[in-house]
Amino acid sequence: MSTFKPITNDDVVSTRTLLHEAIPITGTIASGTYASDGNIKTFSHGMFESVYDYPYLSSSANHIFDVTYGWSSTYSASCATAARGAAQAKKKVNIYNQMAQVLMGYNESGSIRNFDSDGTLDDAANEMHQCIFVNFSRLLVKDEIKKNSFRMKLYTNWSDGHQKVPSATYTLGDYNSANEFRTSPSGDYGLVYKQTSDTSSAGNSVGLIFYQAGIMVLTSSMFAGDFGWDATHAITTSSISLASISGTIENLADGFRRTLVDIDFNNTIELNSSIYFCRVNHNEFNYSANPTYVSDSKLVVKNNYNDLPITYLTTVGLYGADNELLAVAKLSEPIRKDPNTELTLRVRLDY
Image (cartoon, rainbow, N blue to C red):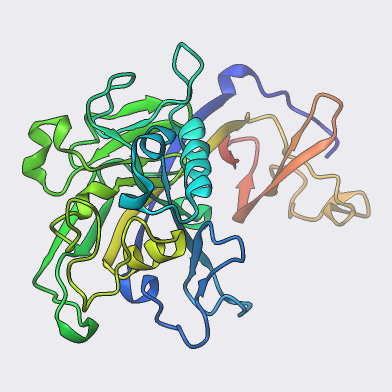
């Protein structure tokens, strides 16, 4: 039929639904399961490494995350080159500044804020001047990481021959961030702790997880002691393949990847919907403009002239102000309609 029925504001409801997917990332992928074929991609600029779930030249490969390292200009200026080394010093500062200005923003004086593990901005306490950055793919994060779902298990000890010791691990997590989190220019972020008991003080945190941006920031100082790095961040255990802080960015990224046992989190997909209640009164849509509805001037669905007309609803069309068809909804099966019945069809438009 060519009849249009207007939909009023009372017939439209907007809803918001959050869908979550469980994302597991195994340490075998991060450490280079397909090393011979290349699921770890390096670049000539040497500023980060990319991890794929399959060899990255494969058409079925999916980008998982990037790993890089940077330090603040404050750290760079205060450290002796002989003590820390100067490999890619400018690139490390540039990486830190790029991450900090996007994730932390600027203070009142116009300077880039340093990363702060306790989430208290513009003070000197608990600033993270040397950081490892893990940038997760949007394919995994979707709209954001669900709060209090992020867990990262790391090896803390190694045996001879580069063999990992499964018993020597601990798990980082954004414990309690469902109730306690901070806000930055890039969205919400939570504090990352080694264990749940550490949440008694924000000063015990070892990093930050930015939920909407899908980026984890870890202070490199957490690797001292637990990973065989001494106070000067040099390797003290010769059998492991971790690089010192004075190494190149690729050395540091490679060392970090090899400490991973697994990473688990739930992502979030924000589904916005408009629900239209299409109401069909008893005296509406009882006839059809379909040519097959009539034969010899008689309704084919009527056996006797005094029978009620019958139609079967199969499709709902949503039209704009100029009667332009914008969306079509198909019913799973035809619904009978006659003058004795009234119907309300619920049409949901997701976006």
